[in-house]
Structure formats: structure tokens, C-alpha cells
Amino acid sequence: MPPARILFLAATLGGIGFAAFSVMTVPPPLWAALVASGLYVGLILTGVFVLRLRMFADAIIRGPADARGVVITFDDGPDPVHTRKVLEILDEHEAKATFFVIGRKVEQYPDVVKEILDRGHEVGVHGWAHDRLFALRGPRRVRRDLERAIRALEKVTKQRPTLFRPPVGHTNPTIARIAERLGLTVVGWSASGYDGLAGAEPRKVVRRITRHLDDGDIVLLHDAAERDDHEPTTSKTLPGILDAVKDKNLRIARLGDWITTLEE
Picture 1 (cartoon, helix red, strand yellow):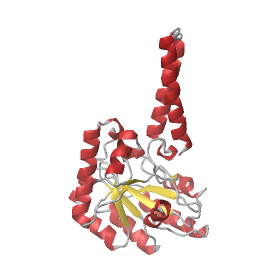
Picture 2: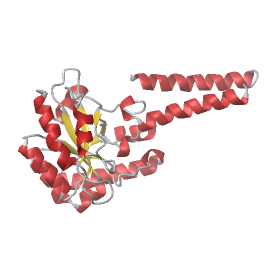
Picture 3: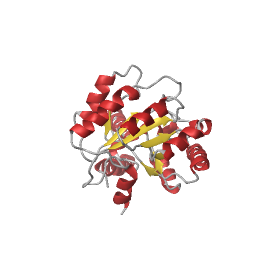
Picture 4: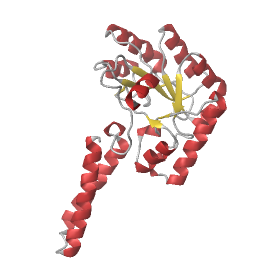
């Protein structure tokens, strides 16, 4: 069990014990109750926002202990222009990647999804609408969003997707539970250049990702803008990232192979 989940369970049990003790004896000072409540809420929010802690979801953050190479992943596509630029760069470097696609865009550009697969890459679900408040939605809405995204991708690929990266990387017990029931493996990342931010500088993106890049890393990039059609920095940063992988004597691995190993 991840340390963050142990901490969350311990804090929850401690909170229950604290409340029971307060009821049966003398209530604590208001300031103490407020501090305790604030710390607990802060812990929960940290678990929601920081996927790599795996507080609520058994997310794949890195490859297995003996992993060789790095995995390249892309979010927020497909896009008929920008995704195809990324595909061309990947082909030039003989590299394969995993694309976490948005369901509504899959319906708009099914031919781009087919092209991703035809070029030997993998696809996964990134939600139907990329709802930035996904972690605040109720179970019914979360399930409806994911089921709609699954149907859209399944219609194009003729296969049910098994990989899922939560929108914005936010998770909670509800999202984790529904993803598991739908047969989705939650996938996070261990290296990010924050290339999805407005005004991201290509040089800084490459440096953030490559300076500590090592075997087992899962790299997060974006092949499309989340909501509009502006071009991400990926076409400018991806060649440098792939060159750095080669310079470090690493290789490009397939996410599916790692997940198969981790689930054995």
C-alpha cells in the first residue's frame, strides 16, 4: 500500500477517534478543532491533486523495478494538425508512444485516432470532456463521462480501451472505484515539462524532462491544446527529448508492456 494511502487511513482513523474522545469527554478548544480539520482537508486535497502519491488510485506512475527505457505519453488530442506533426516526429525517430485522447475529440476526428493506431501507437481514455472539475463530480456523472469516452474510442478502434489518465491528473476514491469497475488502469507520469501551460518555453520544457530522465520514467507531453486549437510546444520540444533519450543510452519502451509486467 502506498505510504500516502497509509497516512490517509491513519488520519481518518485518528479523526474518528478524536471526535469520539471529544464527545465522551471535554470538547477541544475551537482552534484545535479548526487546525485538525484544516490539516485533514489539506491532506485530502493533496491526494486529489498529486496523482503520483497514489493516495486514492493504484496508478501506474513508473515502470517496474527492472524497467528499461522510458515511455512517452501525450494528452488532450487528437488534433488533425498538431497530432499529425507529433506522429511524423515519432516516425522520424522510430519511437512509439501512448496517446490519452479526449472522447469528444475522438468523435470529431476518428481518422486521426485510426492513424495513431496504424502507426503502431497505443491509445487510452482521457475522459469525455476533459472536465477540470472532474474530481468534484458525483459518481453518476463520473461514470457517465467515462462510459461515453469508452464508447467513442471503442467505436473507432473496435477494441475496449483499458488505459485511463484522469483529466488534469486529479483523482479521488470515486474516480478510482469507477475506473476499476470499468476495467481501466489509471496511468500517471513521473516526468513532466509542463508543456501544456500557456507560454511554456520549449527550452525549459526539454530541460525539465531530460535532466533527471532515467529507466522507468513515464513522460507526460501534450499533442493538442485542451480546449482551443493553438499549437502546443511539442513539435519544438519532442525532437530534443527523443535525442536526449538516445544520448542517455535509453530506449523508448511501450506502456502496455510495462503494465502487463506490473499486473503479473
